[in-house]
Image (cartoon, rainbow, N blue to C red):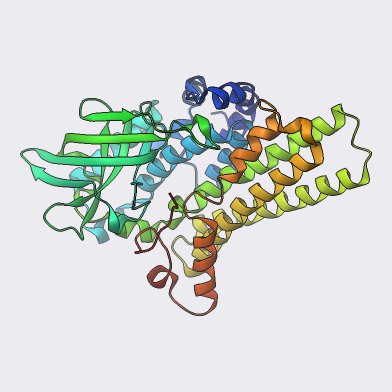
Length: 394
């Protein structure tokens, strides 16, 4: 089997060649996802016995970084799919027993993973207007009906809306609003995409609103047990936080690459001030990459450990701030000509600026780390996805 990181590295130039057009038009890069499917990357996190590559979190991070060097928007949507399949894979037999997951739910999990290895891909429908990604404030609701569950609500920032084969939907129980569950809802009847995404950066993610008024079979309840969403958020913060970090390290590296090409083409590489900017950017991106790699290593070796979680939050904070700062510096180094629409650095500057805004935002990450450093409990007192304060500014 072709190494996934090598496959992503080979795909990156193709993604980059299409990126400007999709950014300009705000269109979804469908051909990129055809390429990802043909490369077998939808099965990246799926165990080999179900047809996948059985990658760990470190391998995911390396793949996402390479894809983002081609097109950050494509890598960002791929991150959502990897988050779903990675979280499903992480529910081991031991964890399933501890959570009370029934055998039929494990069978449904395996079917979803096998479908991903065969070429299906999944979006995430979690955020809502007025609630962001705070699971405790969701307005989308569900209730049991004959043979399954009925879900109703509106999700926003749903990357890949209208293109994914299914969506991971978080909803609150009508019977008990403190109970939050997740469902893997297939595309089709009962789902309506409202085209609302026209943003500063990451314009090709098709992060439109998703309206749901749909009934799904009982086996679409993830884990087969209501109320697991908050538990999973606490057990696997890396998929909610650090998975974005790898994408923005790739975007930052792409900005350096684009600046180097521009400066060499314009004969500006001999200017000391320009060289200094390139040098600082190279060091900053390399440092952020090392932090992401360390966080990923710790996730694979000791998931959920207190120190592991600190590295997870450090990774997101540094990747988001580094991407924005590096892209801005590279734009200044290249000069006014690089600010024209269609120039790679102009697009990368806008894409990179989104890194600090994606959950968890840089302010949220810094708050979490500050509470931890001061000896507090950031999961209780901070701005985590299941907390009462915002994780995403709207």
